[in-house]
Length: 119
Image (cartoon, rainbow, N blue to C red):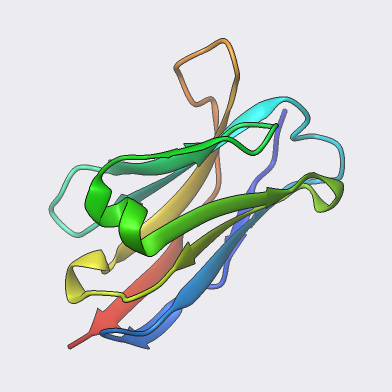
């Protein structure tokens, strides 16, 4: 069982930055891939990007890749989503999730953190 908890959400102005954290009990994220997802009101949840244990990351789109960076500190069992040049369309609840490297399904989810970007 992997318990995830997001933090760092809040209100930002367009063009601003936020850093989200996804923390798990020490040692429980070993070898897990951690993904970030977001869900805006009335929209299906969408994949933002992910990072594997060794720090290799991938992103859903060039638009996200140009502004967002996913990193992890394995010693702290924490994964980060640095979001720069925020846009109002980035407003959503952001979730982190974890899966085994060999699997495609994310089995463990955090409760989400709200990000609101004002224009």
